[in-house]
Length: 275
Image (cartoon, rainbow, N blue to C red; front, top):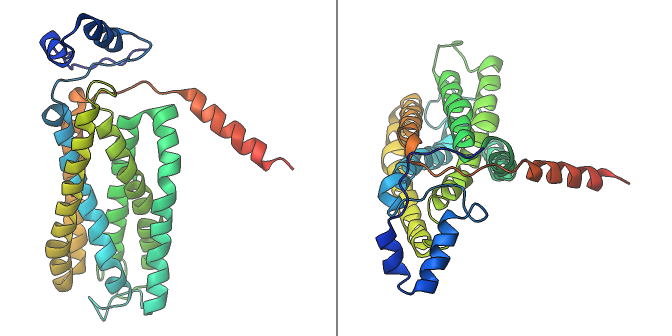
């Protein structure tokens, strides 16, 4: 059941440099090669070996998160297009947007369970992007495109918009926000490279800041001229994120799943439901 990955082991010279004494070297070797502590191979420089793909993915994915959060309410209230919009008031649009955020914040609890217990991090991230985030943006684009479904923003447009904005995209993006950081951190050895994990989260913060800046400068500016085009750009960004993620497929450290976590979760939920 061991996951096969084409990632080289950390060189012995690295261990001698990190652990100069014989006892430390023995400990390092036991940690690295013991099945009890480790089931995959780790690279000496994970940032440029595999994590760089996940950071680029983060920039594109979180640009979508910030971009939709900045532009949803103006679209719902008709600020971008007076003739083709859902016709919501400011309060109704705020509640609509908040509902999507609630879904996004609840999702990581379940997606983390699926990633650890059933599908693994890699497959779960791919499913979230390809089956939820990207289709959610496409449905939002279809619903907002004037004249594509109807000449007015009717019930069909609203139903498609709700599926895209309140279900698909929040689930995909909400799950991604957590799993991306967790999967990136798992590229580092938990003992030998724990200092590098701390540096990764600095780069994660930089990637999030870049995404917010791109969303603020590019997406909101384009949306002011044409909201549909801005959503189209976000859909293209999401597609690029998927391609970049798959490009590093053979470089990622993928740990084995633990199906007992799912069983324990279901058992706990069942016991909570008992009178």
